[in-house]
Every structure is written in C-alpha cells, then in structure tokens.
Image (cartoon, rainbow, N blue to C red; front, side, top):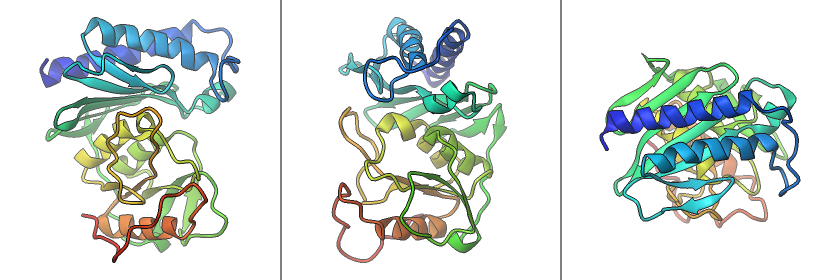
Length: 264
C-alpha cells in the first residue's frame, strides 16, 4: 500500500468514526471499564472495520491489538478526549498513526467537533486542512504558552498554561503554532495511541517530541506508558523535560544518569 492509499484509508476510518458518533444517542459512560464511554465503543467498532477491510493491523486503546503481524499496524485512539466529547467541549479527536518496520509512517488526527484535519507522512511534511504547519519558534519556557496534561504540585516556569484534555490535538496545536509546547505532568502517563499521531505531525513540522525519561516513544504494547514532551524548538523541549523531571511521581521511572541530552 502506497502512502496516498494509506492516507486515504486513515481518512476513511476517521470519517467512519464521525458517522458513528452522529448516530449515537448516549455519549455517557459505558459501564465496561473505568473511563470508557459509549462514544469510545461506537467509534472503535466503526474505525476498526475500515482498517480490517484494508488489511491493516491495529493497536487500539479500546480493544487492544489485532493482526499485529501485518505489514502495517495502525495505532488508534478512536476518541481522544472522550470526556470532553461527553460534555460537549469541542476538543476531541480521532487519532490514527500507521506504523511499519521503519517506525511511524503516516498519521491523521481529526478534531471530530470541528472537522479540522492534521496529516503527516514520514519524510513528506505535515499539514492542517491542506496547509503547511508552522510552529512558533519559541525557545524559552518563561515566554511559553504550554498545553498540559495532569496537574503538577508546583509552578514549573511557564508564562501561561492550558489544560485542554486531548493529547493528540494538544501536540498538533504545537505543530501549528497555537501552543508553544506540551507538557505531560500525569503520574501514570499515556499510551501510544494518545501521542503517536500527534508526534508524527510534530516531527514533520520540525517540532521535537521526546519522552521525559528518554524512553522510545514508539511502543506497540498496550500496557506500556510514556511521558511525551514537545516544544516548538529543541531549546524549549529541553527546558520542558528538565521541568517535568523535577516532579518525580511515585510511578515515574528513574531519571537517566548524566547531563540532559540536547533535543534538536
């Protein structure tokens, strides 16, 4: 499958989610597991049917791994920001990132409340609704407007922060220049479905995205978690990583030894 066909499949999967949500009467909690909404389940069924028809494997937040031996596996969050969706807050997305043997290959992240669509292809750049993305170029945390997940126990040095509630869109906002950076302050961190799509959009827009504890962000294990950090520039990313490491929640991994590595 070529890149264009792969992107078309990801777009079709996101469109199937929109159709499923349009027909949903109850967006409340499903009663299946903590934090799972009826919108999550309806969106998952619709999305995975498209991926299966295209011969793709998947890792989904809602339903785990299937067909992991296929050449391309799509990491899926059917509704990233499902609490926002259930409350009518227009900041929730479908995030899809296709991964092959060389890593993240193509991504589509769609704000399902507005239809705004971010796309990226490895080595081919990133766009929003067809236009190239341009980050802010901010280098200093003290001047930065930072999107944040979780809540730190003290001020970490930003100019202002926003807690918006959908990691994939938060990362895309950094790539677009709406935010200067993104900081994950959560003690339990995030699964790869939360950040891989947004991370590829960022990478193709020239925005560094790293794990706060130097772990590889690419994982196809459903149980594994990471702590994604993004800054419009390498300098800002390094400051954000250093700030996050000062929190040291009980579930955090050990801080890597040695000096803070430069992020380019």
